[in-house]
Length: 240
Image (cartoon, rainbow, N blue to C red):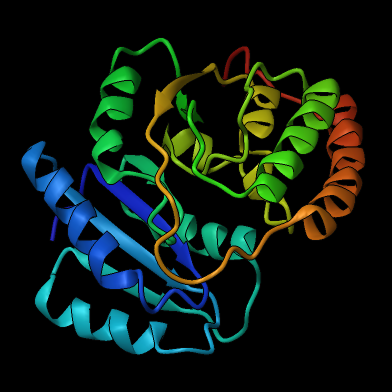
């Protein structure tokens, strides 16, 4: 089987009630756009029926792949596992809770195809979240931008489209998903962002809040700041 053009990676943890609807929406959006694709769901050690639901959908959807991790690694670990398993030339990532709209993927992909950027990040112009989550995101983005200067105002938006080359410079650490734009810029890639839809969560509960994002994010920022000063980009002048 030939490798697909697009790989869509969706990390999920305890999202049994959102799996069926979102998978159908992704497939519908990409089929309508006429894309050659695969969808990789990464079950991040879920303790509910997420794994069983994925296996059930997989039997009727040959373009869907399901990776079941042996333990819960967190969103970054699950995303990294999906990126490593993906076969496409271009990647897309989105959350598994249904708040990202898969219909936005073709628009971001079209921007990427223009050729002057290697990553297009979603910008949630009208977020459908609780006041607590909005506040934590505002604080996190302000602090992160002060450190990274990557030009992205909503790094917490999981909806992104990027090339395989960008995926290959991602580093497997707990927190990677929040710093993907910074890692891309650090390695010489050009990025941009576009407004995307954001929908209210219909089922389940958010796994994030001020307590488990802010302080962990500050520790991660210290590491990214150190890495930005130490990164090297070898350029081969010639080979003989």
